[in-house]
Length: 257
Length: 345
Image (cartoon, rainbow over all chains, first blue to last red; front, side):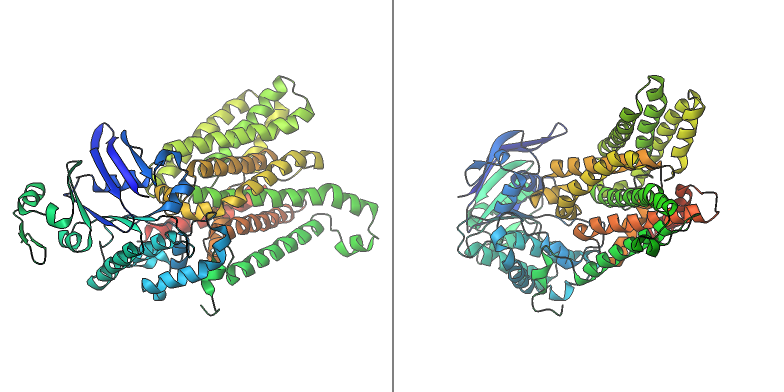
């Protein structure tokens, strides 16, 4: 039970954005994807989420070719928190969160919708935002609401053995320190519950502290993937990010200024 | 947030405010229909009709003229309101009105083709009654498809772009109608002129039936798309990640909006601005969720056009104004106000 990408290549308008990238998201594991701008991080998320079809390679959800799954099937397996979207009309925050409920999948559980939302609203500390319109929120508040929506999409009936994965593209962007820490702790808790997590993140120290594995993308290729201690070496990071970077091993800290 | 479990009610159900709004709209529509059936250049007492002591003339005016006319204006209003709401949802563009973006013009061109060329090739009257809505629906569908292809990838940024495409499509359609006008004879010209303004005059039961069918099908097809249209407001990619079959949704909305607009235009000509005003008013009353907005817009559109038609035939009795004139008189200032409001940051 994994989400796996095998030698995936993505081409858009003749430009090769990803080339021969392979990785595997295991249940209960956090993988952090790092890399400079234009390395293909968001493209990787989009390919794994199924937004774009790879030119080469194959992506499988729990062993099934992604191309063979309907969008509803995909939505029931993985949840995506992307960089913020604008919404044209004045939906309330509660409306936006409720959009995360994948209908038809757990029809018999519709009665548990209220309890599921209440729990998530409390975890994300957004109770005071619920009645406001989404468009009136600040950038950081909007991201917290999108996170809550992504969490609702992960909801499973109690005792369900169905696997669940969460893909996040820079989830901590625009968040203040308190909410950043809250979100990262929530990710750790989700991983402990068996959810597989892939997150794109810019802060190497966050990646070092919270991820089980780090994948470094560089120029559309997987430069390296493995546990933080093995992957994060001063020499490699200096080469990939093109600034002098030093490493403090205990606790693992990346210094670049 | 006063009830014990507010979110539980939120998944499928309407909020209290939305339920009240829909109920109010139903009442408004019924009252407007009753008033419109009774009044006109020939007053009919509804009580006398109910008690069964109305004169034969009163009964025949009521059955053969008033009821089909009110029914038609209500149906056309409902389909314009509904397709306006659905198109504004599909294009994520609050200015998507079937008239402004050229859908009605496409339908009118289709209908005009049948009026002029149909009689040239001696199509029978019965066949004509069905061909007319079919041609109008095809014209409307072609324009929506064209718009969709041209605005793909523009998304939210395409608000004004789409109106520009609409101007071009409207111009193209009027060229087509102009050419048809030039080659038409007197009788055809009279029918053609009727499209430019829109009117509910001269409707009969037999004319009403094909359109009634098309509009009902459109209403029924659109209803299940409500939640998908909500999700679509996050963007196509995001909606697809949440399980929406984007292609299916697209065709469903395009097909039903084209059917509704095409059938309406084939019967009553081009009536502008209803699809623009109505969804905005309905959103102001009760919110933006499509499970409320779609039925709300159908009801509000119906009551708006029933009232507008009542005004059109009573303001300068015994003469009659084109109903399109009334809706444009209300709609164009509203359109200006919308643009003014969108300019503000």
